[in-house]
Amino acid sequence: MVRILKSKKFYLAIFIPLLSSILFYFLVVQSSLTFSTEINKQVQFINKEKLKKHVKHLSEIGSRLTLKLEKPHYDKNKRDQKIEYITNELKASGYAITKEEFKKVIRPELPAVIGVNLFATKIGSKQPKNIIEIGAHYDTRMDSPGADDNCSGISALLEIAHNLKVIQTNKTIRICFFDLEEYGLYGSREHVRRIKENTNETVEEIIVLEMIGYSSDKEKSQKTPIRIPLFVDPPETGNFISLMSNWDSRDIAYQFEDAAKIYGKLPFFGLKILGGFLKEKDRSDHYPYWLSNYKAIMITDTANFRNHHYHQKTDVYTTLNYDFMHKVTISIYALLLHRSK
Image 1 (cartoon, one colour):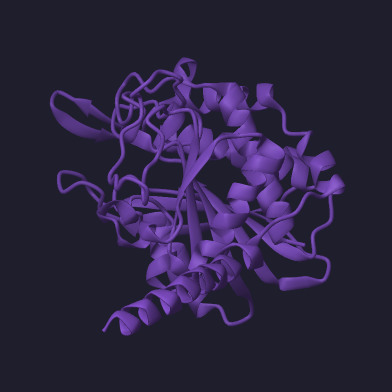
Image 2 (cartoon, one colour):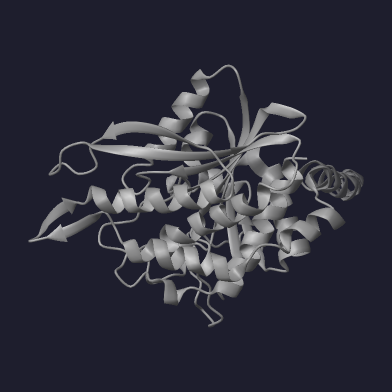
């Protein structure tokens, strides 16, 4: 019996490190991202002041849905103002804009409204039918200016689009501005439905930006949907960027962490595989992609787990940390350039 126990211990001592090495290879080494002098040069053009300008302008337009006399009121003009701003910025960068329109009921007290997704496309030089998408939603919660949620994500898209236009990528990059995320992920659901039907192109993945501008250096400023010591144990100070991915998307997640470390010089924490099992997994526009077996990750400052202005009237542009947002945008842009090579 003693010999058997010793034998088991011996094999376990060999098997566990071997298994760990195999997992490390398939989960990390194969997904690693290495420094590129050219990409490092490009990401330096991300402009912090322009990021702030976009957030300020978009958040000051305000929400299209407001509460008047205790009843929801839909203001189409505010939606159109945001569309006009996004469109003008993209056209100034040299893009042609395409739209997807769809009709949805967002509140039972209101008639159906027309949702509008916007797209700008950078055609790849070698693999034009292979598409990497990057997206964020431009609608906000009722009565919330939505500086962080999600003018910060839209601002990053506009700045990335501006810089992306003058460089060459092998794969096509589609920049997506989704509507009606706050009321059921309707914009991204509609878009996924359409790309599934389009057999003339291959959408490989999407990078979704969901609130990327709020950080705090205060101790205990970070909450978490799950904490398992030594296994899932995010920092308790909310000064890092986070991401959520499922098993199929883990390679993008690992590469984003590399980009944050190498280019953004930014603390990070990711739910790279467990993200697909959390009850919070369906809270943004990555989720319809998962449901249709597309790769997708969500990059976020963790929303209400850090930002107490979440979905409030106080979600204004002065509450954001633009140094933090600048580093996040640099990291995202670096990831996108690596993935589109």
